[in-house]
Amino acid sequence: MTDDLAAASTADPELLDVPEVTTAVIRDRVPPAGLRDFFDRSFRILPEVVAGQGATIEGPAFCVYRAESDATLDLEVGFAVDRGLRPERDVRAGCLPAGRVARIVHAGGFDGLAAAWEHLRAWIDEQGLAAEPLRWEVYLTKPAPDMDPTDLRTELNWPVAQR
Image (cartoon, rainbow, N blue to C red):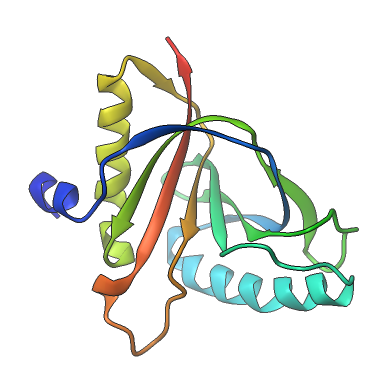
């Protein structure tokens, strides 16, 4: 995707102060080729465990990127929930951190997310801010096998600090 297409498929970035969000998550180190299986397995288990503990999912699915290498991604996927959970199966209690984030909403398929992240990173630099290592995506539109990928909306959140 070219920079022009990336910019056309995203809303303008903005800075927001966000509260901490209680989450139920599954965390793992995943090779890029195993992402789909990891997401499918996680999003099958998470609702079962959350419901089984009497908790409520309070938002769309998300993925936190903690660290990346050429071989693996350190990921945490989950949902916002109404309260902390006890560990069960691979599900753990977690949180999305409070603080200042740079946010952009990407419109389009998942194959355009890398360019959208690059666009957001460049904008953060232009603002004279420092991007933190942790960042997350919120899947505002639930993907379906027969949907048009241009209908997908993904919110990108990158915590920032003053340089």
